[in-house]
Image: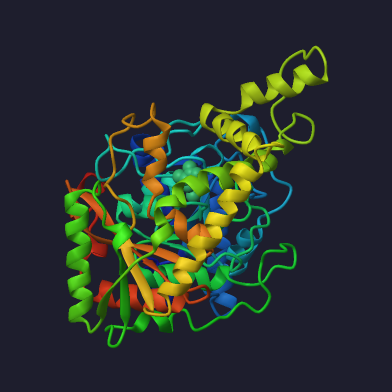
Length: 489
Ligand code: GLN
């Protein structure tokens, strides 16, 4: 049971073979037993979890079960939740309790989900290894000497070790897909505008999007279908977003007639040989399922990381100005004057990576440099979107590695931010262009999971779900789980 998918647990709940309380107890026991090895959760209130499960069991006796009735879902610490702290794993938010639930949290509650604690993450979601968290790093369940990816590293480790069957993450430049890839999970970043950002602590508002991290493609569809609904409280949440039957999209078992683009810029030197081999093998399977593999080019890919590291820090520098020790955030002791209070409070509250982003962003936006950096980066962003547009005239969907390398050792890249930034080289372009992207497990390299990424035109998550479901149906990578935590490999 612990490594069951969400949909398997749902089947057992609906058949009366188990109860939400028993399911919650099982995962609470596992968190109790294993969290000390992983540091995946930064907040857990077992009584509150059980109370939600009891309420769900009661609801079930009186009504038709809701879509996520009684199913446990862990929440990245970036989502505002009325119950318990919301700290974005930053010292600056120590003691902060959100006055309201993020819109997506409300939707999960209304769908009957049982919310299980807050998961560890890189501070303000800035990082690719979960090592910038004020609560310390997270270990990868497949090898505890390795990082789980980031920034949604706690969510990834928690699902991979079956401390919860599913979790929510956010993805600004790859923070759902890269950790999903490094821990052998399915993770979806939906089309920008599909899911409300209200109540999600902002990093880079034009890129941030929430999404699920699960064991199977169908589980991802179950959660995303609940989350995708217009929110009048978020001006970037799209009204009447194109929709479809999310679960039906997962019934596909072949790829007949599907044209899959294979961009040459994503198969460059420097990618781990075994990662490349796994992706090539996956594409062969796609061919055997009826797909046609088409070589394509996304020529501006090589500028994506550079453009992202101007745009994301620029937006972050303005978003994070709200932590001024007055409205939000830590306040230093005995400030001499207003300026001293701002400076010292922010210096004490923010970690090194967050400060680096604020400085880079403020510089890129400053007068005299705005045109040279910010404006240029926005122009590159347009070119990247146009690359995708042109590619989607020839193909239905694009397949790439999610990450150029498998999980690396903790501490290996912490002194070298530029190398760390390259972790997201294959995920960032989808954020810049606002497109949906999903990572799913496709084998191992150095005994660590490898992820296959699918990117589709905006609003066509159904294409991704169909392709990923067909691939999943033909392989068994999604059934593998780490032996150190009671799994099968
Ligand atoms: N690793 C990237 C960064 O540090 C992406 C993070 C994210 O998607 N939140 O900015």
